[in-house]
Image 1 (cartoon, rainbow, N blue to C red):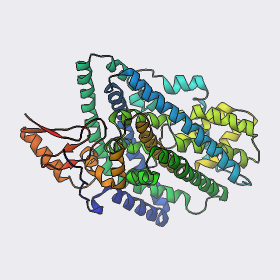
Image 2 (cartoon, helix red, strand yellow):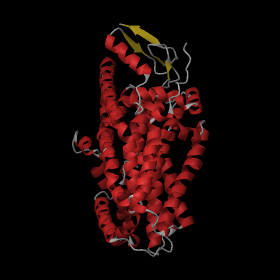
Image 3 (cartoon, helix red, strand yellow):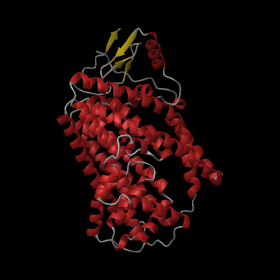
Image 4 (cartoon, one colour):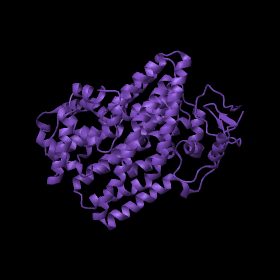
Length: 500
């Protein structure tokens, strides 16, 4: 029986999170010192997100197919999916309700007297046009959910449609004979390793993307934002913080872990989100980290990708808060009954946003279009979106951070609910996050030096003499050093080395 040891701590300047912080700080300084030039740095963040989006669809497809098909039992997979969807529905309703309460209590749009610029109105009109295309249940099913071809969703990076294709493929693979199913799952898993290798290369650019994103954000705003917009940002961020600490904190406590320790575990990913304003950029890293922390591969592979479309807590808070801000800014009021009706509608429309920068703004426009009525005429929506569009990037960061934390908590809770969480392993990792460092290094790299154990493994593989075969709950390198277990309580922690 091997004993899990903490991975040796690396120097801080070799860690990705350190260079992301450096990029953020330099971006803030650049935005303040040379705002005109800094506005042109936005393409650095946009380029990084564009590269990440290239591999998001394949990552989701591979992880969902492997996660479901490796179970080998559609009934068990269906039970896991139903639990996940039930959790997502409850979380969505709670987040929408908290957004409504915050808007009514703090009234960030009350007393607004400013007018949006012509540029903002023009940009808002585009968002409204895009949102109107997706209004209604039928539009959601036909335009967002059901694929029009097999390859089209991958080309257009349509996450919901990729998810549908992945589920159908996984169900088909699950019905194959066991030997063939294992070969197919193994092949898809191999492809996912190649995709993770691509991500490993792209992540080198994360600090540069953080620099460009923060430089643009600081230059765009400065300190001249209108009082009501600053108040809206403050209320939104405060509401998100309350949701994470109070709501997710209570759920985490019930599940047997501490929300603050979970946040510490994923601090690297949260810093990347702050710089890039997109939760998609860290999806592959979360898959590896949560499995290394004790959640089963099946649960992680199903819950995380699905949560990116169905468990958007931050987006839900943004939707109800933004809608009532628009009402308040127009010196109107929306009766409680209509507010509840709007929130119920947003339970559906919130599922169309996939965590991409700006998706919340389009979803807000679509929700207001679908709701209609005298309070949300086409003109009122255009003016309201124009007011918010200037601060949407700062709001987008709050959405992405809350969405990310919400999906991490959901994965751990559902894994425990389904009996697929190694609680002892999770406790050890939350107490000492360095236990997952080596697993993260092997899958994604750190944007720094190559780990010695990885070099040795590569050398052994090149020599063709040995292959390190491992259980999912413990891995040993050729030097005998234990790597972090990746969680499944029914397996022993013994590790075997196979000689070829």
